[in-house]
Amino acid sequence: IPNLMRALGYYPSELEIMRMISEVKYTNFCGSGLLQDDITLGEFVRLYYNHRPLDSHPGDRELLHQYFGEICRLSSKADQDVDRMQWRYFEDLLRRRGEKIGTSEMRSCLHSVAGNGSLPLEVSASRLERDLLGVEEQELF
Image (tube, rainbow, N blue to C red; front, side, top):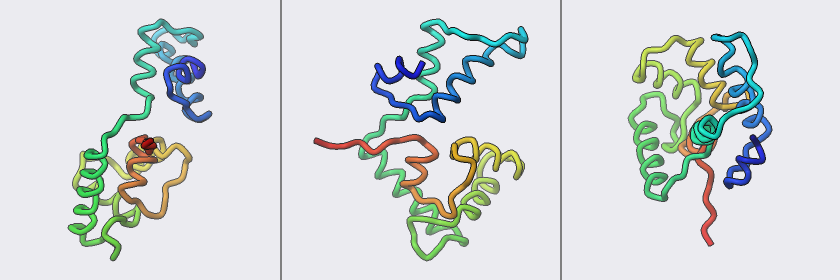
């Protein structure tokens, strides 16, 4: 799986590789009780599509930064710096304004997305892009 991903220009981290392999292994475990060792081309395409980094365009990035800055300014709990806020305030904002979800479930989801088991002290648009959305900085030549 990792070599095929790399052949397509996606270079997953070891953690991402481990997650993909686990996803394949346990695909049918609930139904059959058996682990899966191989995948079809269709399953690989789905795996690639679900795990690849998102392509972004400069306009998308600018909008994300603009909207996140607006959220920071409108939030009564935002730090003085308008392009970042304390993680706990961001989490609270998601819980109050987003889809109804319990505190423990929210933390579990955020820890899964963050990938390293710990959440940052503060969040910014750049951190959302990179760490939570998986958008990588594109080099311009």
